[in-house]
Image (cartoon, rainbow, N blue to C red; front, side, top):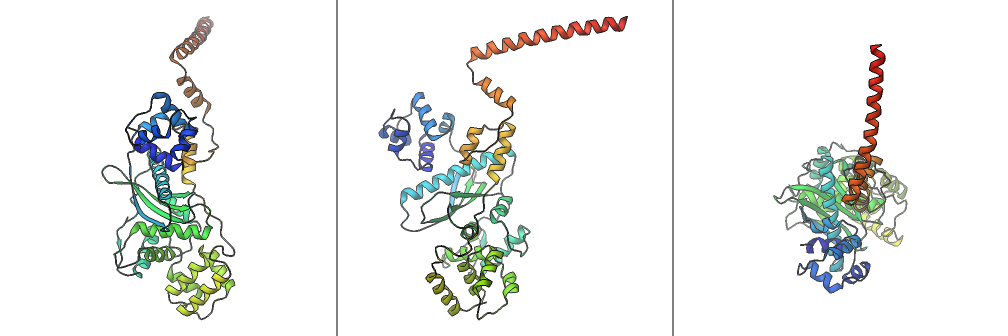
Length: 390
């Protein structure tokens, strides 16, 4: 039954039924594809081969059921985000988490048991400060600025995804569980194309959604934002840098702090207000100025985006070791992997793909060659024995 797998792959690649039918060369109609997705019919072997090729996977992948169940913890989005786009994003994340779990299994990486998923209870927004510091202490980060958020999260077994999505989409966090409910992988997702400072805050914001247990009387988005900004800019460190009370802050100082902590000007000023460093009136004046300057969409001195490396590094390793082939690795990565498999592995796989009669013929040829080699070796050893006897 391929229905669930087919829907997931088609939506993840943003294909309509019409587009998929066209990509298959028109050998089936969209009505037939719809029946496959609803498990009302099964494709013939020829159609299955065409279908898997169009989706960039092996036929047996379409036929194999998923062994993980994805729980979406938070889904930050504008209310106007189309339902089709929501479904596509969820399909992409599901596919990536399944690939992640497979790679983790192949490299022998254990389950991510280092985070209190949805366990840190808060009774006020101020409690998020304490919990942000707890996670920093758990990861031994101290109070120093984090130079690379993506790298830090990947070091602690978090799957960091950057996906193409509607500009109304900001982020999502999700967990992959096995059939017993055990957590196999956790993912934090942001949209491609945003600046580095926005990417960093989006990721720490999603971390807040993942670990906090937020009561109904507290705004979930505000709590996650407060956690994310506190994780990036610990209060004690910021007060040490700028002082406990300020009535005026120059833009040049803000730009230096932005670079130091890797956070946007708007979020930095909000952080200063939350800590009582500046008052509400002064904060609002800055908000008006930022809006007039057009900095809500693009700030000065934008930071470069951070790039996940875990998946590429481990796929390169697995291709090199022959655990998976390059084609599958590049499907998972969505890009060229730039690693060549050892020649003996390539040759072995090419041999196994030959029809059985051709394989037998090659084995006979190799056996004849080796027989000749061993006959010469035996003659040499016999001659050597005679010389030694002499």
